[in-house]
Length: 222
Image 1 (cartoon, rainbow, N blue to C red):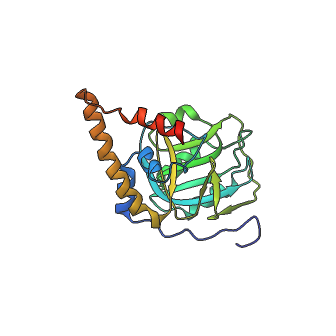
Image 2: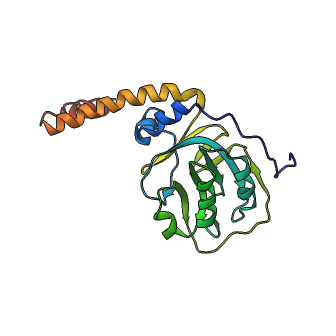
Image 3: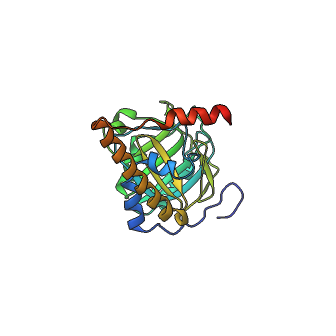
């Protein structure tokens, strides 16, 4: 389907399983630090028991408060995909609740990232199936469209392209282009080792803070 406002594009190639596993094992903060600290969502909240999320993005752009195209997008999702939904940040109507999230989990979707509202929060918080959303309302959605599937979207101020790898944990959500993932993983692992060393030095009473005064001096004279 190619009519403007109703485009349905095929899902992008899924990322390599080893890359997905590596990203899922790393904290989002480490990954973000190694993407210039300028990426990732702002303002989305996890509504599930803590669990890491990583998978290939299938994207949906829907009219605020309308979930018809989200229902259709389930047909484009494969096990391991993350469904990323651009609902314009609207909080007047919930785009989904427990039934749709349960169905997503049943077909193997790795998580949901929703720039819009959800409902049935008590049920969602009782499970570890990843659901990130802008907010909550009891008011249900409409089902009229329009909407588009597998187009570039924006969620929480972050641009997501179909096929990006989407990772999430309690700190938030980050999208990484597949071509960039190996380098980001390598740098994040190096930083993970540095941070482990810093924590050991704190425990041993040997933490070096000499850089603080030096940085202040440079900033004052810069």
